[in-house]
Length: 139
Image (cartoon, rainbow, N blue to C red; front, top):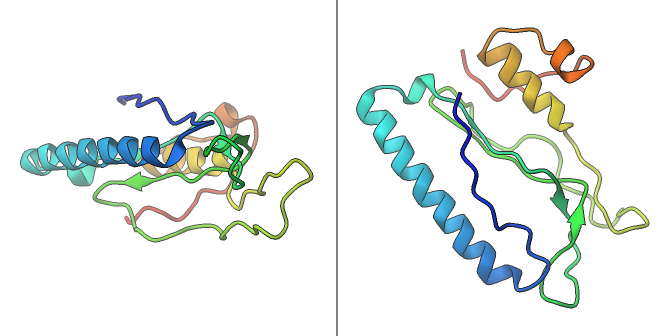
């Protein structure tokens, strides 16, 4: 297991240009990583999952940014990832009183997927309960 950190996404101001730059850097890094793994014949043996310690609120603040929120999007990549979108689109007309969206998939279900379907280990202990894996992996 390898953990790579790419920070700077906590943009309370000036978000559009900063996110464009950061997502471009992330994309370039992923392309280079996949290219190297393809060359080694290891892409099908690789699972890449993104995570964040917090989400963002959908409403722009007065500084052209967004504030901490409760829900976030995550990416899964690898030769055995089934692709597609999972979960439901956030209901922007039903925000909580503090401006947050609800989440469609508990992040612990994403972790349960990696633990159970990728590494073949039970997830209930590490996750403190049973969470249904997300069907993102092909056999």
